[in-house]
Length: 318
Image (cartoon, rainbow, N blue to C red):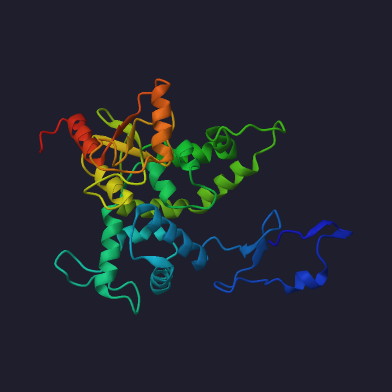
């Protein structure tokens, strides 16, 4: 439904000529368009418009450090398969282990070799906590909110039982949203709840192709870490480092954050041991400032961090 462009019945914000110039349907899927509440943008009303799904898939690839995807290839794969759930990329297998064609190329014009290269990157990065899984799905109105809502659960079904029984109020309380109007329902909490209901089936469908790390089990150890611009050899990118760390030991999970806080356990920085000359980034300065205040944040290189993980795991591997 198009948001009203009138302050009241007698006071239009825009004249009829302006309104008539606005596209009434989405050029991609043909569904009606709608104006944002702030009247700053026009967008498709269809949550499964291929344009929106393409952007979600592209955001997933960027968050996971998947190379060679690109918007055009993401869109081509969705157009070719007719899928509207980007999480199904985790289950896409162009070829089997013996090199025999299975799902085939992503689309015409994309080679089987490149398709397999992209697909393998997704499958290599398919281990998440439940909260991380929901976040990587890149649902509308849900990013960091995923941790506040799902971090206490290891099972998606149990999480949805709590969400559906508690409704918008449960979301509001999970996000610690303070209401200014007494019993009024938070608009933000409502949007989050509606998004979780709209894409519930997508999340359950994607579970077949990912591994959920169960944090709330005996013996599981968790760490909070942040990476500076460069983590050090042998990792070319932070995304490679993230994926490698959380695939090493089943009893250790590292929650990688984007900024240093008092709760951070480790900052990984290539210059930590003084061997490699690296720029002192703002994250390093912040970690050092917290250290001076008594916070036990440790600054280590990537290789040092791997040694710490090995020691924590009890593994005797070299």
